[in-house]
Image (cartoon, rainbow, N blue to C red; front, top):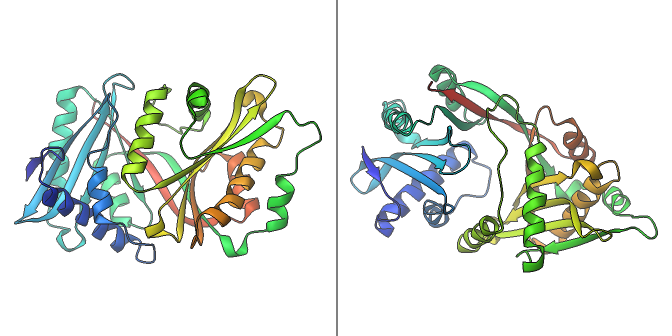
Length: 327
């Protein structure tokens, strides 16, 4: 096992880790569109200006058998770090995961990051058992749901997009946020701080225009398409709701639903239903080959779960955000 620096590594080394991630995904989700090793390799280098990530990998010659990372922010939530750990399906139960994890935990301790988070899927029961054996707590259980677009209730989607006469709200669709909306979008995205956090000991995140531009650059480099819809109150210029989805032509069948949020002061006016329905309508026309939309919702987020269930989303699996306390 050795430290791994994606920025200094050769393209072949990055691709080897990308292949590991793709193989592990295919093992867990055999019916899903395969991850692209090249895209996963590019993603290893992605981080914001204030973020740092340390990586470790186990090699068998030129082949990566295990990989893990510890990511943290230098300015926000400085008590926390996020773990990722993957072992190739053919190399499991050999202690490789624990070996990589021990290095990551030691590094976190040196940095004073005493609260660690990581995620597991019910599609990989071994990961959940591993988390429990570590003594981690299931801090935020989530339901992972999927919508079969061939069964979408078009009448309901049309109904939810109907707005009253003289409606002060205007719907925007963007791939790249216009400069004059950048600050307003950053403010709108921080409404996600009001989403349920379960038992996660996480402070509010501050989002800046520079972060948004960095994320957009990463999305473009990964050959991914992000559609964002935002609802503007034309009386004030304030954005009161937004939703975003992510899609790749190479993995056309599956669309990932990202964040959806409505400003607390604007709730109860149908904005969440409007933006969700409008986005699904757009996906039908702008994402050729799309069959499924996948989303995660905290089990305690009854309002958003209610919207998704009404649209036809059904449970697919569960995803758990775990929290491990080192101190």
